[in-house]
Each structure stands twice: as C-alpha cells, then as structure tokens.
Length: 223
Image 1 (tube, rainbow, N blue to C red):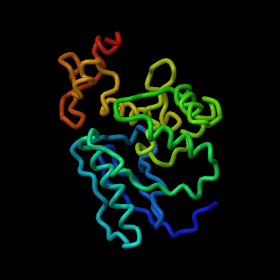
Image 2: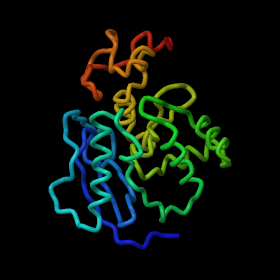
Image 3: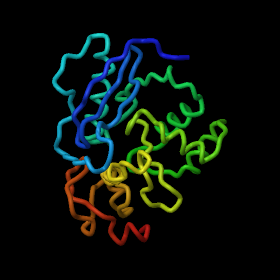
C-alpha cells in the first residue's frame, strides 16, 4: 500500500536546529533534522518550537499543529508528554511491516530517561509475538523517518556507550538528546526527576534548567 495523498513540507524551529516536517491529510510522514552532520549542530535550549514563518494549508493544519505541540512539550517539559500529544503518523508508504512494528514498539515502550539495547528491543518484540533479530532491528532504526517521536536515540549498544546516530553522522545530537533526557547521571537524580547532582555540572539543559554535563562518578558506578 502506498499513500496517494498530497503532501506538504514545513520547517520547524527547535532547540536542536530546524526540523523538516512532511505531512499529508492522514498524518505525519516524517520529522527530520535539516542538518546533515554534527559539524552543523549548534543546539540552543531556549529556541522556541514553532513553524518557520509560512501559511499552513488548512488541509494539513491539524497534523502540523499536533506535531509542533508534541515537540513543544518535549523540549519544554517532556514529563508532561502523554498519548494526547502523540501526533498521528501516516505509514501507508512504508512497505515493511517489520519496520513499522519496530518503530511502534520502541515508541510505545521507551520513555524519556529510559534506554534499551537492540537485543532488548528485539526481546520485547518477541514478547509481543513479532519475529526477527537484533541486526534487523538496527536496520529498521537506521531508516526511521520519525526522528525523536520514534526515539531511536534511546537504543544503545550492549557496551552502554552512546553508540552511533544517523549512521554516525549525528552522534553529538544523540548524546545531547540523551543528556537532555537525564540518561547517564546518578540514580538519585533519576528518582527525583531532577537534572543534575552536585557532581554533574557544566551546561544548562533539561526541562528544569539545571546545569549538567558528563556523568558523575556515581553515575559511572551505577549507584
């Protein structure tokens, strides 16, 4: 099945740079950063999420506004995200049922601040009756068209390192997103939903505007 609806493309400003949105009357086709490599990555936490000055066609306005609102909540206080904010995704042009299952399983089961591995995601898919292997999961995530909404940045290698993002071209983006979500700091910080302990300080990031940077020793030791 292929989506035959007319599509429109809009550019949305965000803290991680401009994001291109492609929509049709059925929903969002893709959300992707316009920058192609880390060389162009210059995050600005205070950047307001909004569509670049342009009139939005009425037939697309519902899905554009829904998507902008999702990103606005994500970049201001992702703790407030719920199913009511979830933009409708149009996957009619995606031929692979396996890829769809990978993306939706990840989106529905991995929240901000949580991570999984390729094998862990595959195990979760098996528990839901889907087949496949970890390598196939990686291949599906490599072509994920819904950046951040389907959070492939939360999938890490077994080593626990941040791993690659966008085939290694946007690793700094992945690291920024994970730190923004509170990954890699001490357990106390995660439990309290705070963004930085006394030993994790460097740059302002996160919904509560606390200054954090590299993991502290408590984080590295898993305490």
